[in-house]
Amino acid sequence: MRSFKIGSVFGIPIKLDLTFLLILPVFAWLIGTQVADWVRIMNQIWGLGLVAGPLSSGAMPWYLGAAAAVGLFAGVILHELGHSVVSIHFGFPIESITLWIFGGIARLTDQPEEWSQELLIAIAGPVVSIILGVLSFVALFAVPTDFQAVRFVLGYLALMNLVLAAFNLLPGFPMDGGRVLRALLARTRPFAQATQTAAEVGKVFAIMLGLFGLLSGNILLIGIAFFIYIGASSEAQQSVLAATFRNVRVQDVMTDAEDLHTVSSDTSIADLLEMMFQQRHTGYPVVDNGELVGMITLDDARSVRQVERDAYTVHEVMSTDVKTIPTDSDAMDALETIQQHNIGRLPVIDTEGNVAGIISRTDLMTAFNIINSSGRTEEELAPHEQPS
Image 1 (tube, rainbow, N blue to C red):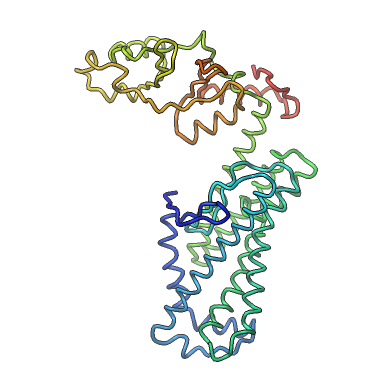
Image 2: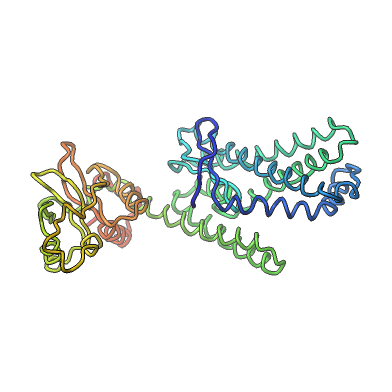
C-alpha cells in the first residue's frame, strides 16, 4: 500500500493509504444521500424523534455525511489503537496503524503465539468500538433535542461503532473474530495448526460474504471478502513457514564460504557473464581483500549494453546497499528479509564481520520441503539441527 504519515499516538505512526482518500468522500456521499433512511432507522432503534425534512434538504446532508464519515474513521483509528495498546503491553511493538479502503490495519512487529495474549489483543479493538458506541449513545441524552444535526451524527456513530464491533467479531480470519477463534483453538493444539483451521473457516466465511455481496450488489462487501480470503491464505502460509523453520538457523541452510563463488569489483561485465554461464549462478557477492563491498546480479549485468561490457566493471553497476544477516539468525528472519526487500539472496556475516556464506530463497524452500517431507514437527526440531 502507498501511504503517508499524518501523525502518531503513543509513539505509533498513523498513516493514510491513498485508497483511504478515495473511500472517505465516497462514505460521506453515501451517508449524505441516505440521510432520510438513516433518520428512519435511528428513530426506530434509538427513538430519537429526528425530523427528516430539515436534515435532508439543502447542503445539510453533505455536512452530516462528512461529519459522520470522519467520526466513523476516527472510531476505526481508536479501534486499532485498542489492539495496539494491549499488544505493546505484552511486549509486541506496533510498526504503524494504516487507514485504507477497508478500514484500518495495525501492523505488529511480531506475532504472539501465547493464546491468552492473542485473545486479549484481538478482543481489545471490538471492546473499544463497543465503548465508543455506548459513549455516543449516552451523549445523545446530553444534547438538546433542538440540535438535530448533532443528534443525527451521535446516533449514527453509536449504531455504526456497535455494528463495527459485531462485524469484526465474525470468524473471518484474519479479522478480529478469526483471531479470537485461533486463540481459542491454540489452547489445545499447535499454533500453526490452529492458524490453518482458523484460516479455512475464514475462507468459507469470505466466500459466503462475497456471494452475499454479489447477490445484493454491494461492491464493498465483495472487496472485504476478497481481502479476508487473501489475508487468510497469506497468514496461514506464513504460520506454516514459521513453524517449519522454528529452531532452524541461517547457518544450517546457507551455502558455506568455502563453496561460495564471489567476484572482485574490477571484474569486467563480459567476464562476469561468462562466469554466470559456466557456473549457472545469477548473483554474486562482490568481495575485495576479504571485505564484502556489494552484490551483482544478472539484471545488473544486463543493464550494460553488449558493446560496452568489456569496458565496464562490476564496481560500476553493482549494488552497494547490501542486506546481510548474521549466521545465528532464524531461517524465518532470512526469508522475511528476502521477501520484504524482494531480493534473491542474502550474504551471511559471522561474528567478526566476515562473509560466512550466502542464503538464497532456493536454499530456504529446499530446506522447507526437506523438513516437511521428514514428517518432523516443530517440537522435534532441536536447535541448530541440520534440515538435511
